[in-house]
Image (cartoon, rainbow, N blue to C red; front, top):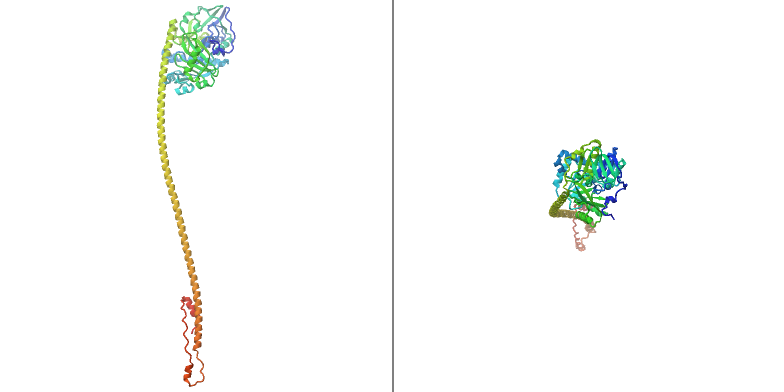
Length: 594
């Protein structure tokens, strides 16, 4: 269970030594008032060059906004870049932007050079829009790329919603070289490296008076005096006791931060982007994944510096408004971070008097700008670097006191109401557009379905026609084959009949020849028989007609007449047989001549 007002950063901070309060007078080259990020950066850079430096803080190292912020590191300022161009012109705006990028590079370089533990650097940042303005986004990206040479991408709505599963978001800028860190561990790492090079840090030591006149400035604390050639005022909203005029030029503005209990897989179902995320509203939500499966969420801007009642419930409601799919979530940590804002929303950087330096008002975009300012002031002290003069257009402006805070709160409420109205309009238009697209898609789908159905019907009809034609072709082919087969069979039958007829004719011929032969043989036999019979008849006739020897003649004539026998009956006529010419010749040859 987290202690009330304990931050997740404090619960996960690396080990840090106990640092004593100042209890005696000291003389140093540089005295830094405020052990936040900008003061620690100045101390580190000065100590690395061998200068003596003392850092005073009423609380602990990074006990204010430096150790309680969102942890985003990206180029730019709290003020919009187009407003900066309008105020200082494009050439100076380019130089200011380059300084903000140098602050990003400085942090990355320090983390790498010192092998800083517990920082958990992760790349990428999305600046998402909660209103639909693709044209404005494209123009903004073009300006950043062309005029400022920024490595940035424009993400369309669908790409954004692929990784941030919420209907509240539209287009986004993707800063590939941006990253996020554990800011408290980064601050502790800066302090440790500064002390390694000889810097002395006194916690629980409030500066209660300052005399910036003369060569040796004097800073009074409850239990000791610090004399230094240079004094750097880097105490954010806690410098009222040192310089009341300076403190009236900033407004204390608070933001709330919460960290959930571990969410497991449902977190990655809602947020699939491991970089940092912030929307473009003035009172924006900003968040990132920390501790593997926790969601760190910040938002709500107010001039109230204390935590409101039921802060965890409010933060839980804000998260679920954007990501209702997370369902029942528990908020383990919730805290307030109070920042210093100038009226012009730009850092206050410069030399107030010889050897008296100011680095303040980093609210809304503090990690890269504190690194930028700390390094720049250190080099101004060490080397006479005058790049800080680029911020001279952003002079100290009275913040309005209590009325200024009330006006700022009213302005933020107005902006929230305006942003809320614009969001509702954008979501309504987006919903209407998507419904229209859905209708168009449905109509297109129905049209496509009808077209497909018609094409399918035509294809079916064509297939049926082709099938019918193929069937007719096959039927005709089959009929031709059947007819050919029948013709073949008929031809074979005709041939068979012809062969049978030829065979029958041959058999008839052979039968006729056989009959003729038999008849001829029969005729020959008959002729032979007839010839034999004729020969016998001839012989008999010859025998009958042959002359007999004359007896002794008597003259008794009647007696002879009486003895003459009666003539024999004529022989039967033989059957006439028709013979062929050849047979006739053979018979005639065989028949003897009479």
